[in-house]
Image (cartoon, rainbow, N blue to C red; front, side, top):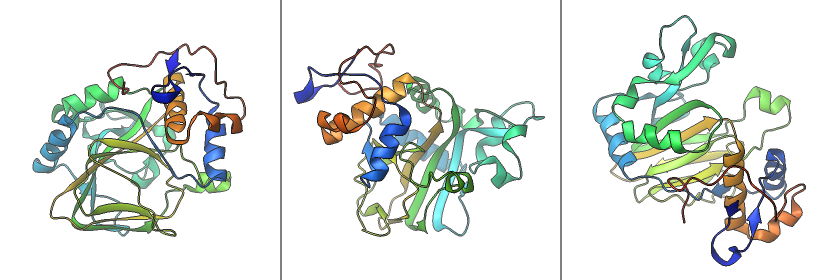
Length: 266
């Protein structure tokens, strides 16, 4: 069973149906959920080492200045022997002239520089991984107003989707922000914190510090353990009564995938 700790410690949660929390967050204009996880500080050191060895490339040229990325898990053309050289494939396959049908996914050579980050990611609940990227915003770097809703999401009416990506702040210097473009509300990042972040909301970022800002963005499929984690994170942020508003979420019930002690906070 998945136990919610704190004042609601006698409550056991059954994982939600994925669409229900997504719909609830959209209808209530909730654009982030803090993830209740431990992020090892060694990730900061490994991000810096990747930077020192020159692996970051410009990210989405035109949307920002000083915004760079490096993929620890990405793709290559299906005819390639391995994925080790896919570290610079930081956009979707079509952004590199490929299609979903003719790529294969796997770990890149950056795992040799960031082995502890890789080990932590393997423990993080997931069904399968797609792009896993170290994200750099250099001093005085800026990310212009944009959103990340794909043409497919727009076509399907899923512009708002809080489950689309996870944004982890490995190192968040003072003077950095990521905020909504409309209300200017800032996402409350601190070092080694993570959020489900609705990237369908117009947002912008700026690093006013003299240090590099290192984040990490995760894309990958949900399994029962990740659904359980999202339910637990929702309850911690809004209280257990929120589950009464969400269809098909059981407050009491069995969960057949246990929490992993190495990942979840006690």
